[in-house]
Amino acid sequence: MNGHHAQTRAVHPPVISPAGSRPLGMPIYQGHLFSFETAGELAAAFQGPDEAFMYARLGNPTVRSLERAVAELEGGAGALATGSGMGAVNAVLMGLLRSGDHVIAQTALYGGTYALFQDLAERWGVEVTFIPGDDPAEVREALRPETRLVYLETVANPTTHVTDIPAFSAAVSGTDVLTVVDNTFAPLLCKPIDHGADIVIHSTTKYLSGHGDVIGGIAVFADPALHQRVWSHAVELGSVADPFAAWLTVRGLATVPMRVARQSESALDLAGRLAAHPSVTRVHYPGLVDHPQHEVARRLLPDGSGGVLAFELAGGRDAGSAFSEAVQLIGLGPSLGAVVSLVMHPASTSHRQMDAASLAAAGIGEGTVRLSVGLEHPDDLWTDIEQALAKAT
Image 1 (tube, rainbow, N blue to C red):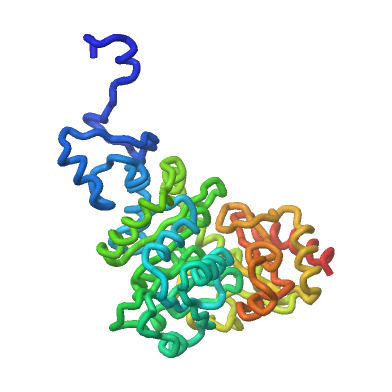
Image 2: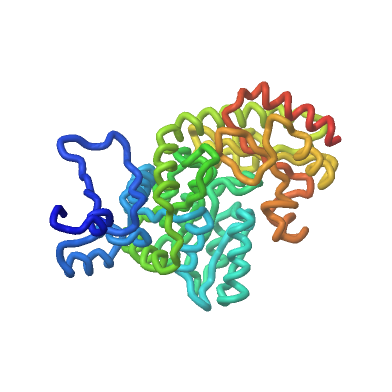
């Protein structure tokens, strides 16, 4: 560059690649463009998710580090990181479905996913059959020639319904129907691909990043061809992960096992205390022996039932709202899975798209409160819960 003008040299600073050592952790590759020696190499980079980096919408080193890390944790062949959890859900559903297709989905779903299915039905003509998710016979009875996928959640939001993934995957075995599982509530506690799932989705906003400072999502694929198929759509959709968010999520992965184990222990402790409180009519937590899917949870979640629980207040909607406003240590907020505990009233927030009948069908009451347990001491959390219960009732 010595022979060029200063104006040109300023545009072309030295690009340093480590020599003789390597970064201990994955660096942030914030740049979005990469150059090539030949036109053929550039053309090849457009062909798939594992080709050379050339434009960050198609691939980025930091983002790929996250994708490979989560794919390995989930036992998948490849992964697609996105800008949000709903970005991952949209990339999968819109990449696999077209007008006239049929989907079987469990009734208890995250509200955003439920709203997306409604939108697909109204605008695309994708028909959705909702099932309780208690018996795999529900899937066999709902199957049609145009059925393309079964959509499940390992632990449903917010009812903590636990799906028997092996049984439901087996219900479509031998067909072309794919099994898609949202595993956001059970990272490392359950590996749906080991139980027959074709695609696993996470909102990395939650446990995988774990510190309340990231928005992101990821879809993991059991089959490389399926990965390629959805990737080809996703790069056109533009639902890609930001490198800095991906880097923060990679950082968070290191502590997922310890965080989730502690959150599961505290959630079980608090669930037991809530079950004994006179203002609480019911507690939804798979670790409790009276949970409808407790035995399924023991098989699929042997190392803990997760850090989210829900409970019903005798005072209904008013009591649920009052409790949510009365907590002091626990935050009132819409997310989960972070180091800080959060509470929310689903009927008026995350599941506001659902009418009373849909809420009832999903097992969500007017007085249901969802609690995401963080890393605070459970005794301190219980002190806050007790005072909020007293004010709410």
